[in-house]
Image 1: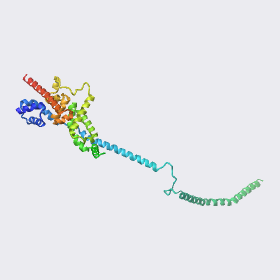
Image 2 (image 1 turned 90 degrees about the vertical axis):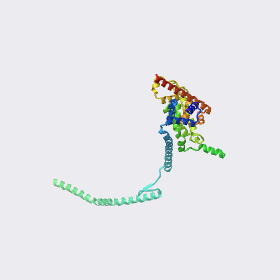
Image 3 (image 1 turned 120 degrees about the vertical axis):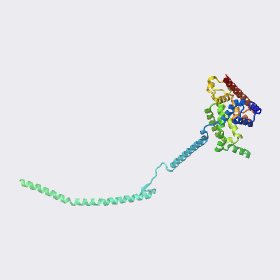
Image 4 (image 1 turned 60 degrees about the vertical axis):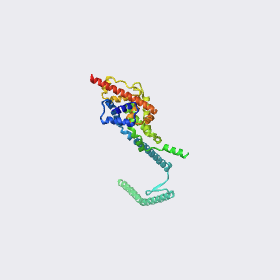
Length: 171
Length: 186
């Protein structure tokens, strides 16, 4: 008992080692406490209680990875913006503002001007021939009309004779 | 640049891995929280302070490789951050960190019926340096040399403050007991 009294005195003077202080904590945990030391029980129990107090902050451990992922997202967006800008620049260079001369023949793009001109001339000749062929029946019709011209005169003579006959009958 | 200077340069700027950071810093977050709570006397403010410190340490993690005793370093940083916070937010209504224990009025006494909470209150009303030292020693079980580093004072000064804090608590505990006994005999 005297040894414990001495240890308590040493403790309150701030002269105990960590090992001696652990011995005091054990003394209260064992339960066989002298009545004169009972007053200090709550003090040592309070220290043990505080030792088990935690932050109760789950976000503390989640905090660092969260910050890293935010940085990663930021860099990803930056990279995507860079790629988009590069694509736009590339398209601008590839397609100049001045228009190009080309023709589409049979669904194919023809850049050879000479070929395109020859092809067009040939097609126009074909159209001309086709038109000439189409106009031929019309020429025949004209000939028929010319041939019919004497008949027109004959009908005129007939009309005149009818008029004369009418006049003669009146008389 | 010489080899020695170059290696120092590399060591200085070598980033601490996140797992290493978790092991060395975040594992002490409970101790940091208890210290911050003891100084600020407010759980919510203590949580904010711990998060603020962890954020600052993460930003400067490259320099942490230079630190020998990470626990003592982080505890010291935590204390300084809390004291800065008190200085910034101090107003007339707030308790001064140097405020001594004041006898509770009857209303406060009925409010704090529990002897354990009364003892916590006694510790909380010690001057900041004394309550920080008593908790670092009796709760965190730190060596006097570590406490001296955290509080930026000598080991002798730590012993003197520890003794003063324990003597005050002892006097108040004995006073409480005497009063309870008197009440019983009446």
